[in-house]
Image (tube, rainbow, N blue to C red):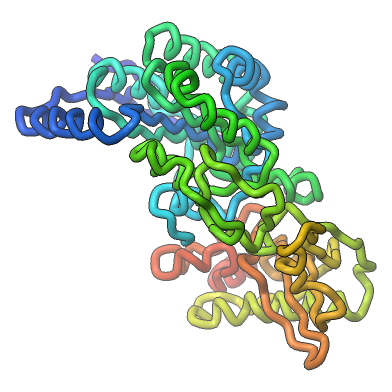
Length: 430
């Protein structure tokens, strides 16, 4: 008989029966496929498993602040290559994983399930999976989401648990033939930290570490040297995709690369003069840029802010019968943006599209809108000659929207950050 136990959620206790996770035995047909894959892998690849363990909304800095034991174990004991320059290329989890798994650019959460925290089910499943299929080739992605999505602080409670999990993997021998990728999909996207410049940077710089088996490190020291050198260079999910491709065909790991290649294997040499543009990172998400703080009362800043709100209203126009028209409530921060121009030639001019002398300007603003009290961050391109504007990349919603877009959540899910349902206004009036 299962035991019922209340586990506290964000608002009220959640009571559910325990979740039973079963690792099924391979059928005869599945075993034949496993044997075929094993034979294929032995001939053409590095014969490595891949385990990606993802902590939702965890930046590189958050990992160091909240998971010091896990971070130290990765760095000191497992000799992980932790990438300081790993930069996201879009908004949210989908934009983090689509480039990794396909090479293309692109709700209900609780802390517990039954009497145990969800993260324990996930981690135990991974251990059981590796034990059950110890000799089969594996590509595993496990995501722990509930603890850190809206607020990173609770994740500190699992630091020792995660560190012990990594130690168990090593002692059990599962790390002998497995590439371990410990990562965040992005940094924290909402909350007080996100309102700051530090928070804006952290959203764009998630945790990314790669731990290769010791046998691989000894067999391919030149590739590991490349990886170590790349720790301080600009990298993206596109590069991680190319790295996984390299593992499938190790003989192509050091194929010649061009400065303009969007995806470069982390086992190859990433050019030291790489820019966001050549790496496929839009200016809105690029962390290689400089800022000039502007007065929020400046008339040019007000023009940009008005355009941002107008652009949001234009995006939701398809659902204007259900979504309220937004108005500008306040400008919280305004910056003129400059990409970091590389001095070395011949690539010095590649990222100079924002140069004033070329007749264009780039702005990044944080604004609040009414009636939804929405906080948005947007990067805008202005052509001086005709005073025209265009949004670069996404418009980020940096505070919770809750139930505001419920009327369109199924029909227009891509508009949920911007839609404030009219029926919400009617309800508030009553």
